[in-house]
Amino acid sequence: RRSIYEVKDLPAVTAATAYCEIDDQSAIRTYEALSRWISLRSYRLAGPKREIYLGQVLEIQFPIEPA
Image (cartoon, rainbow, N blue to C red; front, side):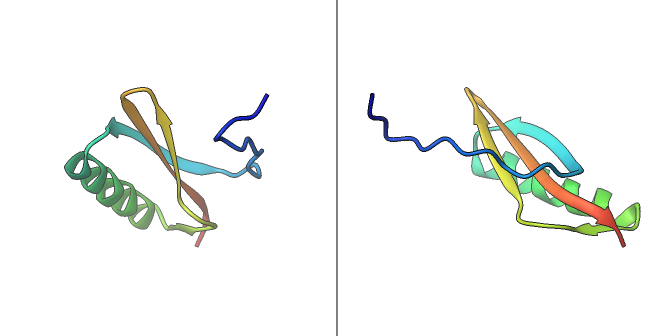
């Protein structure tokens, strides 16, 4: 059966993850909070950021590794 979605497996990562409502202001605040958390704990970004939509909730993942 054809679909407009293409399902793929993402590589396993250690990620700093947060959830927010699906609106621009909530997403901006969540991105900023994750960035601060990563910096304060001496981590660095280890790959592209991920956004996963779960109904009315947005999951934001920052793949991280020790700096």
